[in-house]
Every structure is written in structure tokens, then in C-alpha cells.
Amino acid sequence: MKHTIIAAALALGFASAANAAGEAKNIIFFLGDGMGPSTITASRIFKYGEDGSLTMDKLERTARVKTYSYDAQTTDSAPSMAAYMTGVKMANEVISMTSETVATSPSKDANGNLTVDNCASTNGKSVPTILELAKAKGKAVGAITTTELTHATPAATFSHICNRNAQYAIAAQAVPGGAGYNSALGDGVDVLMGGGRNHFTPYDAATNKTGRADGRNLLTELAAKGYTVAASKAEMNAAANGKKFIGLFSSRSHLEYELDRTATPPVGEGANQPSLAEMTVKAMDLLSQNSNGYFLMVEGGRIDHALHGTNAKRALTDTIAFDDAVKAALDKAKLTDPTLANTLIVVTADHDHTLAFNGYGKRGNPILDINRDYKTGQPSKDADGNTYTTLVFGNGPNRPNTRSSVDSATALSDNYLQETGVKLSSETHGGGDVKLFATGAGAKTFKGTIDNTKVFTLLKSAFGF
Image (cartoon, rainbow, N blue to C red):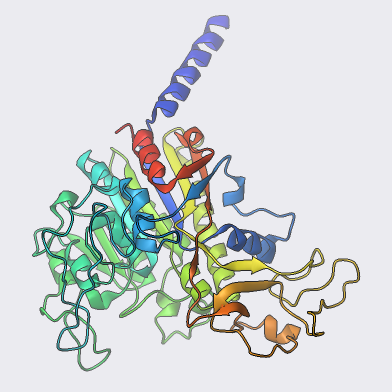
């Protein structure tokens, strides 16, 4: 019995050492776009109350991440996500390229769409992504998002380009063997999901007046390469696990906000779109067919869009949907890897926003409501005697020249836009550090205050690369 205990302890020690050295078989990297600390806190209160916890809050390893880009104190999504994926600082709007790359905007074609890529061959060089490194090691790889599949965050995993807005060129980089293909992807990304089908299909004058000017149907090309192509939740669920998969669940834009996806009538696209949690579980089913393991990137991208629009309710609702996807992944992974000895899960954000908490609100007061004083429970007032909401933004479009009181019914409505300080046409990102949460194989290395480029190094180490 004594020898058995010692042997078990030694085995456990070896397993711990292996994990510390970075022997994760699978990595799931969750990215809440724009999900800064205030958004996390507000979402927690919104769903679970002040003393509750999100799933991400319960992950045992945490860190703070610095997000500045090569040329800006406040980053945009392209270089911040690319820093996670490549370990290289680059300029705003640049995707997975060397630091000296200049962001050169694409031009419009005759149809008015940004299909003309102006990235010169001499303008920087591509740098390897963790997805490409995993693919080269024989692992399965995937990228899924609630935005357009060619949007900055997912694009940073599988493409290299001088400007994030060249989305038609980004789409071409994902088609094995086609013109413009990113050959570093080998035989192709195994799982792709998101919106923006128009970037993959020919120009359509009859309906949405978007699409490819070159006439290519990239979905037909992908199908010819063995991909299952899906356009709805039902088609995603029916997809065989033994094939590569691309699901584009919106014809010309992003997926619906979670608040609207469930409320859209059956005739709309939203009702037929899978949730992020459903996409995550399906992606894990597809990728786990590879015995060498996998890398999966999961983005809750519309958190960012709602924050830019100063619509806190949709931002918080999408953050909860993102957190639900984290829970779904944990539950799914633990079915075959109960202690996560072979699986690393990382949850973080690419940048902050200017969302802030106002006043001294009473505990239990709805976070989206007007502020109520913690001593009296009565509505708090500004210096002019007007009520105000607990959540506000540092900048954005909704700054009245003269304030008036806000009532609860207005503040709690789906379409209410929080007031802002500096008046701008759209709310900007914030430059503050973001949070990172991790659990599983190699998670112990995520600690302290680290640069976003360091995360790439830790991901590589977790894979043993």
C-alpha cells in the first residue's frame, strides 16, 4: 500500500512538472473584445449581484495585461489581438505583421466595396501566429466569433495584412490553394465560424449590394476542398465531425447581439444563429477528432460594438453570453479531461473601454438603473438636482448640452444610450490594463502584470513549442 501511494505521488508530481513545462494538448483562448474591468464588474452585478461570480471569476489564475500598441497608448483590436497571437507589437489597424508595417487602407471597387488591397509586398513581413504554429505541429485549429469572420480579432489568427479593413483579401487567405491563400495554414483552418458571408461570395446587386468584385465564391472553393459549409444553427448542428467546417451565419454583417438574437422573429437571421456557447461546443467536437490536440480561439466580439454605441445593456448581455461560452467549454472539456491536465483555458480582453461607475450606489440597485444613494435609497442627484445613471461613458455621442433627469423606465430600456463626458461621434477604446483569467495545464505561468506580447510566449510554452 505504501509503495502504491508513493508511486501515485510520483506520478502526480511528474504530471505537474509536465504541465509546468507546458505540455497542454489543447488550448482554448477566449477573447472578450473590449471587455475591460468595469464591463466585467458591471456584467457580474447585472446577472449575479455584487456578491455573485461569473464563470471567468472562478478561474484560479489571474493577471493584468498591458495593451498599448506599437504606435498608440490606446490600441485598436487588430494589433492587440495580433500581439496575443504573434508576440509582436504592431501599429494600429495592422494584423499579424512586423512592427514597421504601415497601415495602408484598402480602396473601393466600382461597386463601392473595399475590395482593393493596397498592401505593398515591401510593406512589412508576416509573423507566425500561434494558430499557424499549432497547425504545423499537426494540431487541429479553429477560430470562431460573433463578428464577421474577417473582422480584426479572428483575422489575426489566420491572416497577415497591413490593414484590418481589407476584409475581402483576408477572406481569400483562408481558402486552401486559392489565389491569396496563406500557405502557413497548411491544409487550412479546420473550423471557422462567424458572420460576414458577403466577403466570401460574389457581388450581389439585387439584394445587399456587397460581395466580391473578382466573382469568386470562396464558399464553393472551400466546399471543393472538403469543408462542410453552413449558414444556420441547424446546419451547424448537423455537420459531421470528421470534416473541416465553415459556418457563416450572417449574410452581410456581424451576428446579432445576444439580446436581439433571441428576440428576432423566425423570418430573420438572428433566430437561426447559434449562440457563442453553442458554437464553442460544436467547435470542440469538430477539433477533438484530431488525436494531437487543438488550438481554438473564441471571440465575444459584439461586446465591443455595444460599448462603442454606449449601449450598456447590450454590452452586458453579450458579456454574459461570452461567460456562458466559457462555462460551456469548461464543462465540455472536463467530460474527457476532468482535471484539465491536458487542457489550458485562457480568458482575456484585447483592450478596455471608457465605461465607468458613477456615484455611491446602494447595494442591490440594478446596475443599469439610475443611481440610488447607499444611505437613503433615494435617487442620487447631480449639482443641478437631476438624477443620473450609475453607468456612464468617458466619451461618446450622448452628451446633452443641458442635463435633465433620467427616469428608471428610460434607463432600463433596451435601447437606452448612457450619457458621456467628452462628445464624440462614437465612444473610443480605453487604454487601461485588462484582466486575464486562466485554468488548466500551464495556467500557473499567467500571473502579475504582463505585456500582451508575453501572453503569446506563455501560450507557446503551454504547448511545449
